[in-house]
Amino acid sequence: MITRNKNTKRGSSIIEIMIYLAIFTALSILVINSFIVILSSFNVTNMNRSLLESGTTSMEKITREIRQAENIDASSTDASLVLNSRDISGALVSTKFINEDGKLNLYKGGELEGGLLDDNILITNLSFKRITTTESQAVKIEMTLEYSLGKETKSENFYNTIILRGGY
Image 1: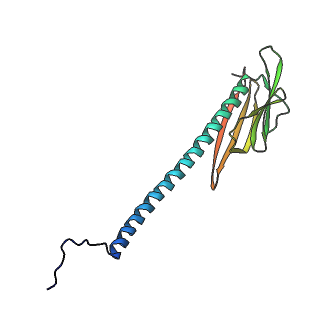
Image 2 (image 1 turned 30 degrees about the horizontal axis):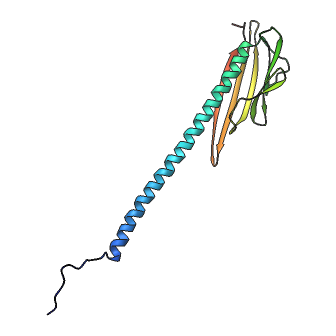
Image 3 (image 1 turned 90 degrees about the vertical axis):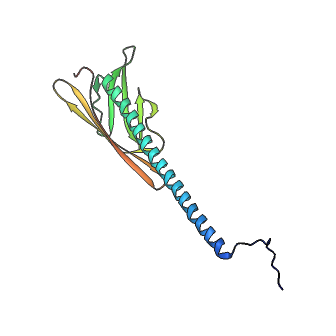
């Protein structure tokens, strides 16, 4: 007579292990894909924020300088803007905005004050259109900024028209 021991432990079969591995692999793939999508969304959101922040900040600086200017220098071109204004002591000061190698630089009195954009942002289009009427002067600005991060590239357009002081 053969007696069986009821206390014997039963192991897992290879089929059960394969099923567990398949379930674990599917869940791992879902988690990793979700992480990749979240990281990509973060990068796109960061690019948009940086573009809008840089564009808004630089437009505000240009607007403030134009509103404080007495007149537009005749040497201004579509690619650069030269403004004449007075400092606190009343001395004439020249302010220049220019696109140099994709960077928007500000010069005051011939001295470089610095760039107005983040390091990762380039200007792909910058134009200043002078508007002159019998009563006032204004400047229309068109600026396109581009941010590149790896394979992702985002560009944004900015527009503004500003009337010089004393023209309104």
